[in-house]
Length: 211
Image (tube, rainbow, N blue to C red):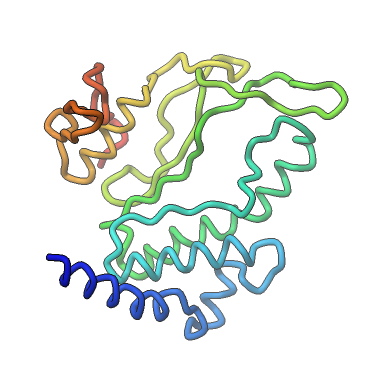
């Protein structure tokens, strides 16, 4: 078993070099991801590598933006539009590219963060927005999710979810369902006891967003 592990590590090292090299991608593909522009080059490269890893059989890929600039407690008027310019085109390109290559039907693309933001200004001198766990937007694409579907609403000021609430456990249960797993039966051992991702709390599969 130990020898097999070493051999797997060696194969991963040689394979990774090819998977991470985007030099052979067409110019039209690079342009789609915004690699030809300074604002979108960094994140566009990461999204393109994510597609390359996915088509090579990597089952889970997680993307981050350099510096993780999303925690906008200050200067949100300039900071947030700047992040959008860096990420919007590459994120859309990833979904588009997966679809045109026939990979979107078997891939879930999830765009989200750790938490929502309050609808009020946090600071007067350098306006920003503090954390909000009561209302949170995210989007999903691919693998059986209904395209163009909007599910759930917050109150009129965007503070807390009021219509078709989806809890964190509901969200986990729904993703696991799309992976072919029953959240009630998926158990892992940690800290000397058996646990579930949904923590034995009420959780439902949100079938309204599934095709």
